[in-house]
Structures are given as structure tokens and as C-alpha cells.
Amino acid sequence: MLKTVLVPVHPAGWPFIALFASAAIFMTWWFAPLGFAGWVLTAWCIYFFRDPPRVTPDRDDLVISPADGVVQSIVQAAPPEELEMGPEPRTRIAVFMNVFNVHVNRIPIHGTISAAAYRPGQFINASSDKASEQNERQSLKVTTEGGRDVGFVQIAGLVARRIICHAKVGDRMRAGERFGMIRFGSRVDVYLPDGVAPKVMVGQLAVAGETILADLSSDEVPQNGETR
Image (cartoon, rainbow, N blue to C red):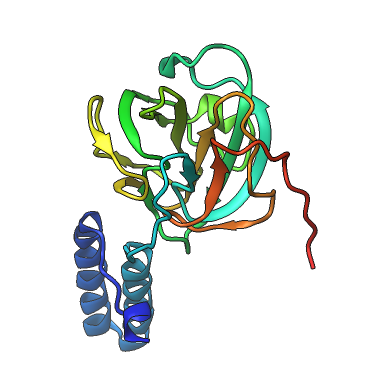
């Protein structure tokens, strides 16, 4: 049980945790009741930057969710131009993260990073469709051993102000490996190869490094579901 509570903290979080803790100490010294609020916010900051281990399915053709959150939309959309995946629409799965989700992002499929591009932009609500085009973003593409491309994009949101990405072109990655994070809420889009059906549904909760979004070797049709 302790392993589910006492999880590691991402290194990017320690400066913020130190800042929140320092403010809490000052607030406690200045006015004790106000200090209580400061320590609550410090605890939330630690919670936000948590980085729990995940058990990733280990098969070459599986596309795994790169982010924790809700599957916000599954639509046909053209990938960002900088990924050079062509102008034709592909199935795009958007996973929306709120401020209580784990924000560490993970590689969605085994392969080599074949494209990576950062693009500055706005900070409108990440739940909006136009956020994928207008917001600040970090776009990446993985090419599998079989030569198929999967695109994924970190998108900043209304609160998010910092995209962190450690992956670079030429890196050979395994599905589930950590590659970055987005601070304080946003979303990650995944672009599937043509003809690949998603294995998730809108409204479903996704777990980074664990939830299977699609299977490149499957010929199943998209799934239907309902809230119960």
C-alpha cells in the first residue's frame, strides 16, 4: 500500500516543491492559519510531480497512451506539418490531463524518433479543437522497425506554461519510456497510421505507459461503448 502512496517525484518538480515549502514556512511564521493553506499547497505540488512506475505491455505493434487523463476526442485530422506525415487526415486520439493527473509523458510505441519539432503558440484551453493548431506544442514522430509512423504531440493549455521534452531525433525508444512532461495541465495527441482503429473510446480514462490505444497488427473495427 505504501508503494501506491510514496511514489517517486519527477526531478523537474523539486524546485517548485522547495518554493512552495519555503512559502509555507514563511506563512506559518507570519500567520499560522495561513501557513496551513501553504502546507496543503505544498502537498499538492508534491502530488502533481509524482512519477509512479508503470507496467507497459511489451509488444512491438501496440500503441500505448503517452499520458494520463481522459480520452477527450477521437477524430480524423491531419498531423502537424512539421512531422512530415502528409496532409491526409489520420485518426487522432486526444488525451486531456487535468491538474490532478500524473503529468510525466511516455513514449507510445517501440521505435526510433524520426522527427521532433517545437513550435511556440498560444495558451488557449487545451480541450478546444483549435488548441492542436494554435497552442504551443512539441511534436514527435516514432518510426517502428516495420517502417510505420506514429505521431504524438505535447500541447500546452490554459494553465500549462512549460513543455519539457528530452527525446531527440535518432533516439531508439521503448514504449513506456519517459520522455518529458507538461507542467500544470494540458493534453497529448496521438496520430495513428492510416487504417488503424483505436481500441479506446471517448470518455475513457487512460493511464500513461499502460492503456493500449491501438494495435497496428489488428484489423478490428473501432469499439463502441456507453457510460454505466
